[in-house]
Length: 262
Figure 1 (cartoon, rainbow, N blue to C red):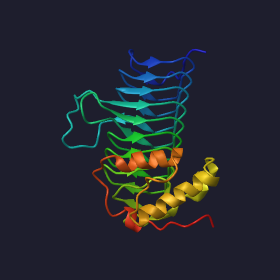
Figure 2: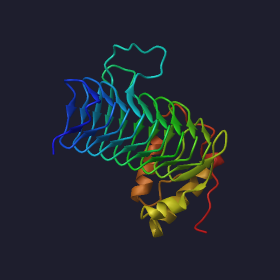
Figure 3: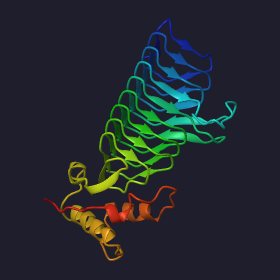
Figure 4: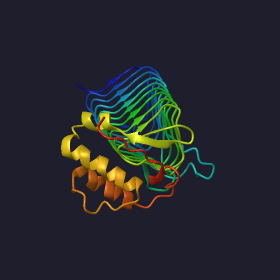
């Protein structure tokens, strides 16, 4: 099926639309955009220039993808991008800003679900299968792993890293890194336990789950992880901890309260 375009939509002549793309009433797709096959762009949505979108994404009414970064020092003539994978959902009023440095991109992976009025700022990096509840907001340069849940109204400071399988409680204020597999809440946010339910739902159970639990007891007591099993989760955790970060601090190991499999 060729693209299904409503007659009131405004689409730049050089925009590239894949097979089966649908564009609703009064939607705007600017020049130098690429929309993959099967995408749905609903009424009054705006896809700005330099957006590259994969297949089967759904952009709901009033969502704005690829707007200028909210950075007072940004030159609007700088060519920067938003790069989006497959099968993401951007609900009503979602905003995603493009990057700030020439040639760079704000990147969103696959199968993410962004609820209404959530925001992804310039230069962010999102993995796969993340969920943003209504009003969740990322500052610039935030890095998000996979399968993270952001509660409603969560605010994340720029340059923070959010590890995979974390849960951020609604209205939490995050000003430091969130360690993988944990639950965080409060203002400022504090780690308060492991995300046992989320890990089990993802098939991380038995000895693999016990290894993560043991690792966090070690971290809380500032002990080495070197002699623990090299499970996929611990390999990811070791790599994550080894990375440099501008926002590592008060959400760190001393604040972790690790509970067992109760």
